[in-house]
Image 1 (cartoon, one colour):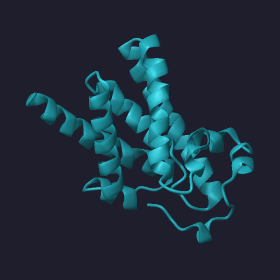
Image 2: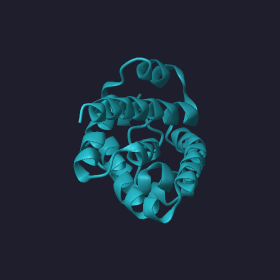
Image 3: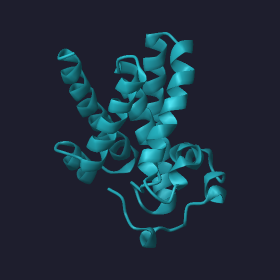
Length: 167
């Protein structure tokens, strides 16, 4: 649940991002500073990360890295949310990056599948159907920030599997 800029303790900037490693990571290396659609920009960061990491790791190692990234995300998103005074500020995009990396891991090969995966993930992350909406509004702190995107990833993967079953 994003909150207006007026309620922030501090305005996010490059100076803010470089003031603590947690801020740089939670803002997706700067993608979260985008004035429009920071979640979408953050999700896009997952593409080059995936294209670089996936061919260099076994499936088991990649999934382990994602679990660690999720755990680290709980910590960094909590730190940044507290520093901003807004727990789930829109510029905090590490949650989108990690969740979409998971989606890409299970997405069939090919850029069309990846584009569809991106559209589905963004749809579910923005619309927040139940139970995503419930967790988004009731779970707070870093775990809440990370968990609702994990659910959006699950919805996107279910849709991809359904579509794939007809092709």
